[in-house]
Every structure is written in structure tokens, then in C-alpha cells.
Amino acid sequence: MGQDTKSPPNTGRITENGPLILHGRIRYSAGEGAPAAEFTQVALCRCGASGNKPFCDGSHARAGFADAGRCTRPPGTADQASGGDLLLNAISNGPLRVDGWFELTTTDGERFVCGDKTWLCRCGASGNKPFCDGSHKKTGFTA
Ligand code: FES
Image (cartoon, rainbow, N blue to C red; front, side):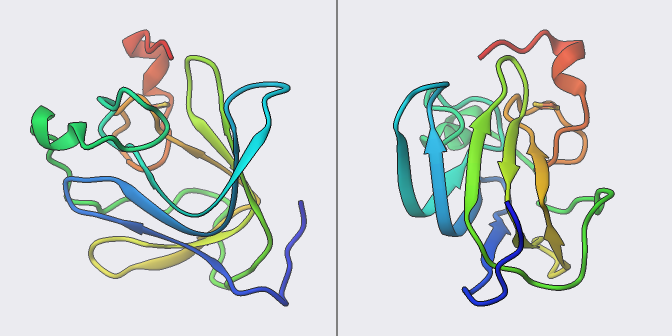
């Protein structure tokens, strides 16, 4: 999946104590062979408590999820915004892989572009949410 400089950039915004909101041209398939659903906006679970992963179902409020929404910029990010589609793929017992490009804004206003492959935490245990840091292996996450 390449960069598409003609379409508007996809964007992601981390919310304090809540989900990551993605806007753009988003496709999600629930599994291999399953039809892909298309979205222009999704709220992605960051707390790990959702019963509808990778999507937020509001469980963060009941779970008392507390995360300021700041993160360390992972390797492979850039400063330039890009367009194109975002394809979401849940990795069994692991993160959500995002194929494509999106501009992420943290709660403290830092912006950078993620792509063309980004691994987002689904388990809620990462020390660098919304990104996977491998903690799902230590916690024995299954989903
Ligand atoms: S899925 Fe949470 S750390 Fe990898």
C-alpha cells in the first residue's frame, strides 16, 4: 500500500483516558476471508477492556482507564502527511496492524506521521500506548 498524495491525509487523535480516534479511508476485516467493512471514523480501544476489540465500546470508563495520551514516537515515523487507505488487521493474540499512513496527534499536541505499517496495542498493557511494545506476550493476552 503506497502513499497517495492526492487524497486528504488520514488522521488519528489520542484521547486522554480514552480511545484513539481514526479518521480517513478505513477498511477493517474481522478475519481472513471475512468481508471488509469501510469506515470514515473509528474509535479504537486503548484500554484493553473492550468486548468489541479493536473498537472502543466505552469500557474504559467502567474500567477506570487512566492514560494521559502521550507517547514516544516509534521508529519509522515521518513528518510529512500522506493519504491513501488504512487497512486494519487484528493479529491473533497480539496488536492491531495498520497498513497505510496517518497523521497522529497526541494529547500534548505532538504530531507525526505513522506508516506504512504500524502496530497498535489491543491488550492495554503497552507502556507506549497507542503503540504495541510487545507487552501482550508477557501478559498472555488472548483475543
Ligand atoms: S498488543 Fe498490547 S503491547 Fe502488544
